[in-house]
Image: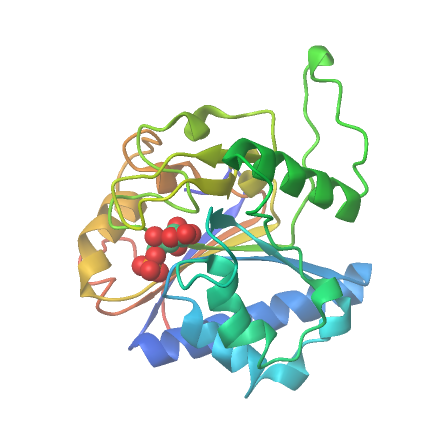
Length: 266
Ligand code: 6PG
């Protein structure tokens, strides 16, 4: 469900390989547009396993089509484990995109997971993003209104329970509306570790959000979230309403139960 006036699109691809290629093409287009308009492209990488094929394409076959020196890579969420741990979202991105793509570490804003409590890690990540977006002084929330930066593109996955990033059903992080970054205890799905996550207001301040959803196991939840009503405490993904564009990208297996079909990717 996109914000009022925003564009919402459902793109269905024949299979996981076609989904990865179509997602990579759209990321390249978003990068080229952002860099031509503002001189830089900010993208938040999703965790989970689905984006891996897309990251590999961006790092290898499609590498030359993005100006990586003007691209800043953030993380929509992170597990509170060391970056070398296979459960780390940084580890997935590093192995599939950052290392093979030879992307300079200065372009990458990873979530610190070694600074003590998850709350301390979340606060440190927010501070680093405030520097990136030059929001060094926190907005005086006593006067109401909170400034959030407009990230050009946020990639998100869809959990079997309807979560996205690390915004899990029934958890307090769902109601955080002042911070950019917060933390969450584990949800019901593995791995059972604390998380650091983007908040809804940061996600919804984005120019575009792109969900990548693949596989028959996601067909039921995709239908509930895309076709059903907004209920962020039951299905947090229904709370994603970016400013301009919400793009759902699915393969046919994941889209099998969808009623809203706006475009079939050949
Ligand atoms: C995480 C992710 C999470 C993920 C979904 C989908 O840290 O686990 O950020 O939100 O995107 O759970 O995961 P899959 O792509 O593995 O199905």
